[in-house]
Amino acid sequence: MELIDTHAHLDFPDFEGDIEAVVRRAVASSVGRIITIGTDPESSRRAIALAERFDGVYAAVGLHPSEAQEAEGDWIGELQGLAAHPKVVAIGETGLDFHRLPSSEMAKPFRDLAAATVGGGAGEIVRRINDDDYKNRQADAFRAQLALAEDLGFNIIIHQRDAWRETLEILAPYSGKLRAVFHCFGGAADQAAELIAAGHMVSFTGIVTFRNAGPLRDTVASVPAGSFMVETDCPYLAPAPHRGKRCEPAHARITAERIAEIRNTTPDAIAKETTAAAEAFFAFRRAAAAG
Ligand SMILES: [Zn+2]
Image (cartoon, rainbow, N blue to C red):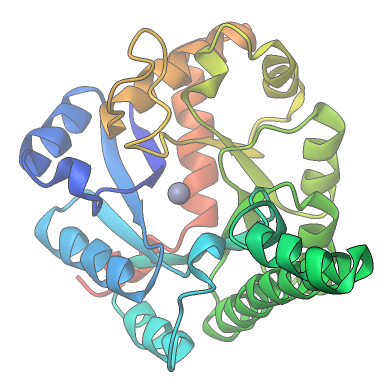
């Protein structure tokens, strides 16, 4: 059996102390390849360094939507430079995350102040200006990374939270030009079907093992073979029975086994299907070509 953990964050400080043991345990659990995902230029650089250090580790370079407000200077040029590395297999993660808008966070004191001094309408205006600026920065960063992926012939890894329609709108013009994987997919079967119809993919994390994930298991049961992959999103989202602890790539096997149960098939079959899907989606051939 060979599994690929298609979404890990091995560059996070959580793994600093025992990265070699983490990679070794992955290999021992049949997770022979791991894609470690950059969240900004610095994280992408660390991801590439890990890919240089470990045979089975590959990298994706990107700017996470939650980092879009912090990005400075020619960050897209930096990502473009990094993407030339032969072990880079995709652009991402990018996308939209509207879960915590400024109006629900730091803008509240200003909103209250504006409301108190010039009346309630002013508070509403301040709210909208902040949220629109925040969303626009994420959307601009997402568009820039889509253009980069198309230019360089890569597929793209998408993080989407509370921004489903907006994400699909920005992605729509790229249908047929590149493929996207909606990582840590938690949507309904009809949402997965909509993506797959447009040529895109989904990937599932350890959430499929959680007791309260019944609706997600319906989605897992519904998607056609070849349209989904397995990931950990480690250090987050450890599958049961490790829930709440640090997750690591070896846990992709537990997720694959649970997916096999849900789909009434064998872990071997799931490993074959998801590894073939990942080989078609990610640019592993670049590393092979570079020897
Ligand atoms: Zn991630």
